[in-house]
Image 1: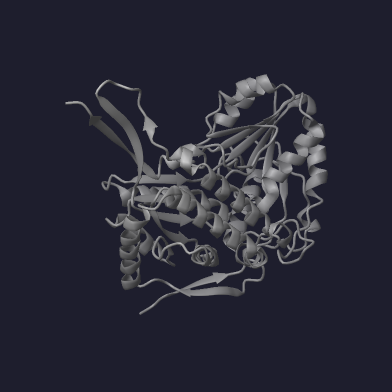
Image 2: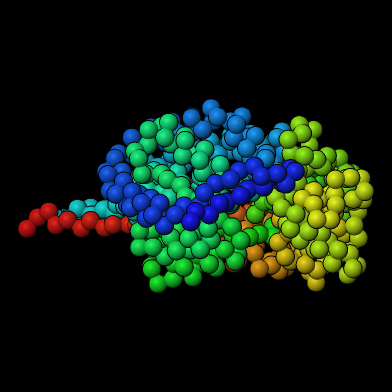
Length: 463
């Protein structure tokens, strides 16, 4: 008997998408087709792969309006911002396509009389990509493009909240005339997802999601000796030094904290501010947060949409309430945001002071429109607080002194360090996490290493 996957929109809790979950027969056919298709695809030239992938990007962008509307309804991104994910996806994909020839080039070894030596990068086989709902195209494309450009085939399992994203990507690849079987998708239950990871047909797993989900992937792949890329949680910090451009720092940190309703693995979730400018920073931040318009994401005036599910909003509410009970001060009056109701996806933004690391709000990932702001007396205190976390995805320092800020960054346990910016992925730079933020790497030329294996050629040319 087939089982249905139902996607409810956070806008009004209506059923937006219904899909049949894949049967065992469909799963087996998909994996078999992927393995067969990869044998021919790996023989194609990088130039041919580039042409097809560039065409895919072109076809995808051409459908921008439909994609933006679907994002708005599936996961609550305000419609005025939804198309930004299309352009962001195109930027990342285009960069990874462009650098493929260099990233995958043979590594030549210095001449040795009588020998020719070099190292090739060969595809792994079939990559299984498990993608999340919060940035459904940006996260998925990080693995899909380098996997296909490396000569692998891909099977995509997208979040049950954003199933149409998998279908849009498939449609774009189909229009670009990618050979059948090189890119496929499946709508899957958690049980079948885990079973596929265990399948001998899968040669690599790229997972983006929760720490608990990452633990499942590691358990399921254990003993198979395959590569696993995990992009997991974050509790990313910003530190505003006394010499920072205050207005710029406030604007950037607040946008980094509340964009996408705070539902970003690299969003700013805690801010440390130098004591001399703390009060002014908080005052300006409160004023800016109060300018957000909480509303339906299909309303063009909305700047803060609903969270993805009522349970997600209630989780953040519980963090806020717990912090207040422990002495935190809430600066935003939720009554100014009438849609905010217990049990609803709609949650007013909140800004808390008088917080510390005994509170969940400063240590536990929130994934919502809330940020705690702490006063610090010096760089050393800020460094200690930033590193006092189970996560290590990104951190930001705002300062006019680039050298000192960079020195601070060298002492932080994170995968990406920013100065005077935050919450951004540059496709030319490696995207990595440390501690519970995951392991492995996507983007940049280094991102190709996970999706290929080195093969050494040692040729004795004189006998």
